[in-house]
Length: 109
Image 1 (tube, helix red, strand yellow):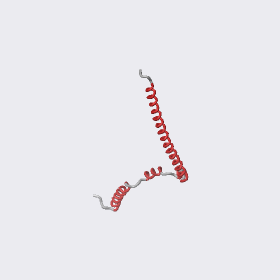
Image 2: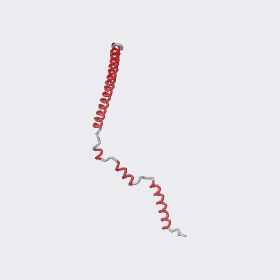
Image 3: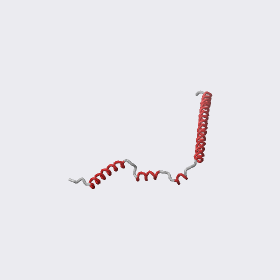
Image 4: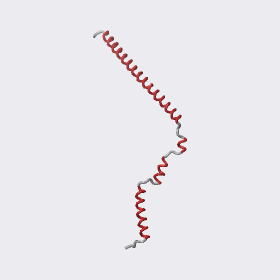
């Protein structure tokens, strides 16, 4: 049986403290994890190349103008398509009338 000496007591206490400390540290962020996350953050150089508010506003205005133009083109395209369809229907009706008139005028054999 081991004697309860000061050295034995300190060694046992050290081991127990070390165990408890390791358990508590397991849930904490490690240096490696922190360094890995740091790589994903923007650097000063990245921020210097980032567009300013004025540049963003200009881009927003450009995008809005493009959207408005596309909307106008879509509306105009729809109007044109409807007009073409209407013209085709009118032409088909006139053609049908002409064919019927021509058929009516031909002598019966």
